[in-house]
Image 1 (cartoon, rainbow, N blue to C red):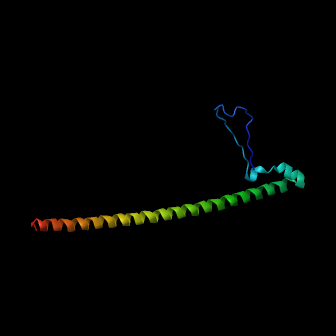
Image 2 (cartoon, rainbow, N blue to C red; image 1 turned 90 degrees about the horizontal axis):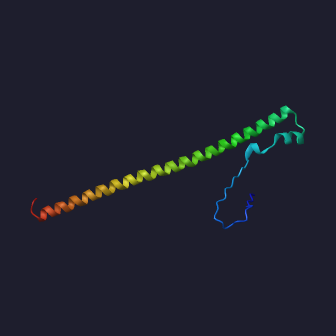
Image 3 (cartoon, rainbow, N blue to C red; image 1 turned 135 degrees about the vertical axis):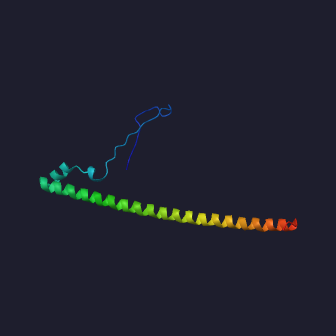
Length: 115
């Protein structure tokens, strides 16, 4: 939950308001000194807990990157398929237009008795 408020009383003055948010998420949100004091951990136990948290963060990041890669691959394959079918449709239209022009030109030349 994020709550924002302005300490300015001039709502309609037209002045711009700049907001800076500093949000901490992930492993850096834990204060390990407080954790050590609360759980009565020695330095080695605290360092092990920090490393385990870092490994967990790395695993989460890897899973997220795998998800992004899968989504990007799906998008790329769909785009590739659409490009292929678009080029097939353009080729078909070009061939049909050429055949239609040849048929009509043949009929035109036969009507003018040039062939």
